Length: 260
Ligand code: HPA
Image (cartoon, rainbow, N blue to C red; front, top):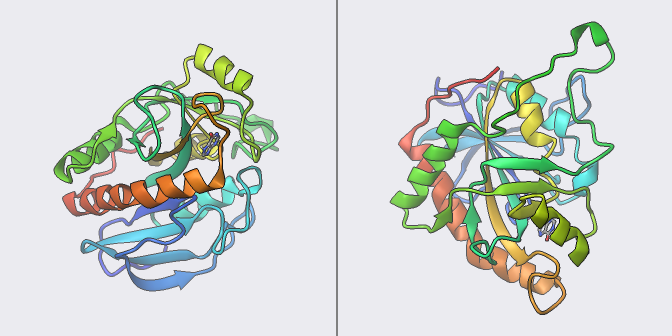
């Protein structure tokens, strides 16, 4: 376990596109670790945020090295759990399908549809005697979602507190027909990194929630194709709100509820 300056369990934050480091984090250490599943995307960065221990992990590496389909999600979650983390917030950049989920909007989704394939998506493999079918009815920890929502309210940052996250394989963006299909499937937002992260956290019994920043309208939902410039603009506009929510959430304190 990584020692933090405090005895409280550290909150883990997995930063995605636009959040490769955590501003305001008073860094106390950086540790390269390995796990039975290989190496995580980057060293674990330990520090204090609002006086509370935090461990930050850059999902795509630091600098950005791993595209969504090549992130070692198993190693990332395992490393954080080994470091003593019981609560993880995954920050994800997403495309918006739902009318309330336009660029720069922050969303705390409540459900997932998984369209990814070929990723290391479970810790239960090899020895089929020990396969465990975890319950995944509710993919995100409700208490944690509520904590993030309360933090957003306190910070006056507008956030949408519902949404079905469509996890796609990437790295390409979708066709407009794929987006229409996902909409028919009941999806509200699309990202490439939400799964298998959420399921692996559940397998490890960790509290987990997603804090999503919409960085573009999903393909076919606007009158233009998706450009990197518009994505960067939305990150520049919206990431301050994400940081404010994280800092307030950490400050307000959170007691992990654990889940099987
Ligand atoms: N689709 C999938 N993943 C994404 C998108 C998108 O439109 N925007 C950011 N990540």
